[in-house]
Length: 148
Image (cartoon, rainbow, N blue to C red; front, side, top):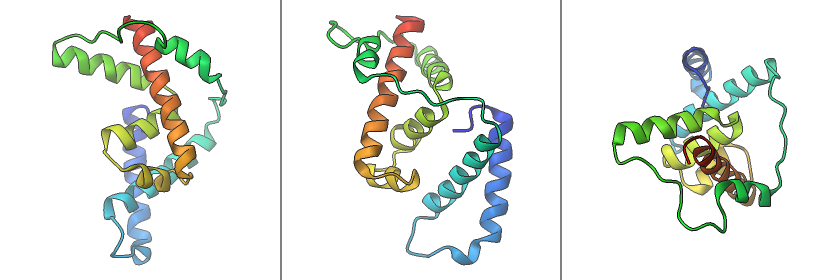
């Protein structure tokens, strides 16, 4: 979710330091994984706020849909080779904005439920679903544009 290895390493160190300092606040009934990811997410948010270089912009849903191929027959062709397919997906995911990467990683790659993802992102379930849908459309649009 950090976007590059250096930021990921910094975030990992900050996460475990913060977790150590806040260990008393961990409630045993909660998921330790979710608790750590919440700490990491907050740390990454602080890092992003310190580096405000990516203005948020809202692209209309119909434009995203057209870029993703709504109304066209067939989808985004992916190579049969697993390594090449993974490389294309990783490249497309890395090219997305931080919020899009974050929600796709949590929901689709880490396998958190919709409710867990919404809680980790401090969103309502409906807002999380909307953001996830837009992020997936941008991912597909990126795959189509770069490899379609």
